[in-house]
Image 1 (cartoon, rainbow, N blue to C red):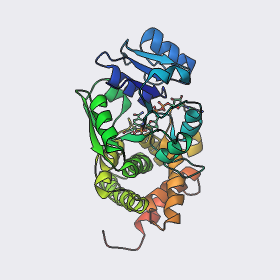
Image 2: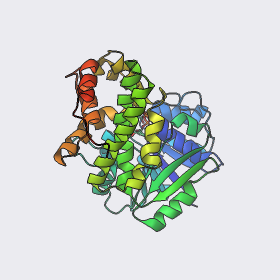
Image 3: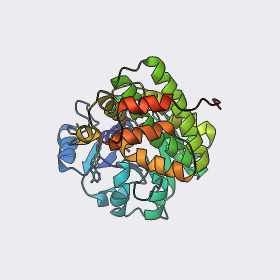
Length: 326
Ligand SMILES: NC(=O)c1ccc[n+]([C@@H]2O[C@H](COP(=O)([O-])OP(=O)(O)OC[C@H]3O[C@@H](n4cnc5c(N)ncnc54)[C@H](O)[C@@H]3O)[C@@H](O)[C@H]2O)c1
Ligand SMILES: O=P(O)(O)OC[C@H](O)CO
């Protein structure tokens, strides 16, 4: 049986660690904040990022990456923009890295699998992504994810060891598709939040999910993803989840924008991450370079940059020339 370490003590790292520890397995969680380490070890709760959810006593936390040396495989759950710097402090020694963050690196436009491969050339990579609100997974509610690895025997082994009665990984060899789904859905969740905040109605939201999925698919195919991955848990599944609920930080950010608040104000002082705000300009720049049309992502980028307001971007989206749905 694989022993797992988890890097990143935010809501999702803690929830994954709890899911893995839920049947009594020992799991070690690395957290950057000493407050998180202390509250997990002393009170079996992450009071900073996952308040109110009781954690297993077999889940222990540390602030020393060296303590993870005893683990066979590591789940990496930092915010996307910090993955490189955190991984640089790790002695991976060829152990598998299971990447669970959703985003693209702003300064390089790389996917997380490319970042991890640059930092730890000898470690095989897998990506875990899908519709998973941390608080539900930590509470043991049922969830399913895509677990993608180009190393198929490794993927099968990891899937077997990660699966729990209420947590079901589906295997894939399409790492790029799993990553693109997670990165792009966050941007589209902001757009759906805007629709909600501005009171544009449920028809508009359904249209946006559908046309947003068309953008995700165009972008993903151009990057080498498989269409069926994008139509699966890591793409469409996660898009539907985050476009439907204020439990999504990205949706909530968009709702604030739709209500007329500025991105600057909404992003100031938050200690949780809304990855779509970082991914929107990166996805857009990459799409433009590949001549992929992503008008919804572009509109989100303009709202975040404060260069246009909601009324203007909605008017312009609706006034685009009529075209075939394909
Ligand atoms: N929360 C969820 O439900 C959920 C579900 C699936 C995937 N994810 C993804 O998991 C990743 C982590 O999100 P989260 O929800 O666990 O985070 P979070 O918003 O709960 O917590 C913020 C995290 O950022 C870290 N952080 C802040 N500044 C940092 C720095 N300078 N260097 C390194 N780390 C820093 C904090 O230590 C903390 O772990 C994101 O990519 C997110 O998209 C989240
Ligand atoms: O809260 P969000 O918007 O970061 O979404 C959390 C997860 O990615 C949902 O799958």
